[in-house]
Length: 302
Image 1 (cartoon, rainbow, N blue to C red):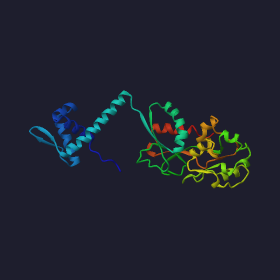
Image 2 (image 1 turned 60 degrees about the vertical axis):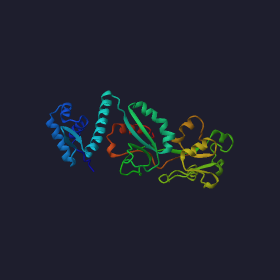
Image 3 (image 1 turned 180 degrees about the horizontal axis):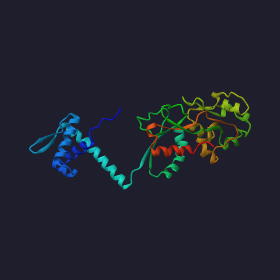
Image 4 (image 1 turned 135 degrees about the vertical axis):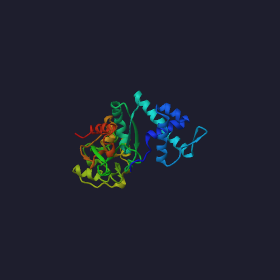
């Protein structure tokens, strides 16, 4: 629904008159005639259907409604003046509210986001870690990093990366003989870490699917191993030596690069859905949103 606002010139004239307590002084500040000020005040009173001033002994006295309008109009003019000053001084920053899945936010985006900020020094981010679904309009979200294109069909969804999983564990787990590189038969049910995915992630690869892809079909007994409902926590358990996990590369990049995690097998499985950048159609022309989505697209799989 379209906003219904009073004539802005009339509001500006009223604010000056209320602040200075005089139509004559307001006219001098605004560089107009006193008659023009009176005309603007009548226009605002007609629009609101309320009397804003009472003339008493050549003085202007605000009515109760006038005091309420003065408070709101003064706040508006002060904010506009402050914004104008910052714009003139070149100190206004572009804000970007980013909503992201907790695992991706803590184990991937936080490691890469500094590069985006370095390339866009005028951008200030408000980073929110939250599960799907989120309310874009109530929470004024600019961009959401989500899993799959199906969660927000009414919004603009831009896929940018399809992650993969493979068996991962700590070097100590291999050294202890709990895993033999290349031999899937060495994996015991007791050492497997399972991930219990929430709604929307039901397509996440399972150990049963991984064993089938490896050419050694098997149905491991889930109750004999560990179960975790958060992928990043499962990866952390494997890194600490608690077992073997079907870990996502996105979440294990640092641990793999530093040797805290190893991948004893070549078998990999892609996630069914891609990670996506989601935004409203209203923000499609926002240059900061465009820059962030384009930056995410740079991570697209080759």
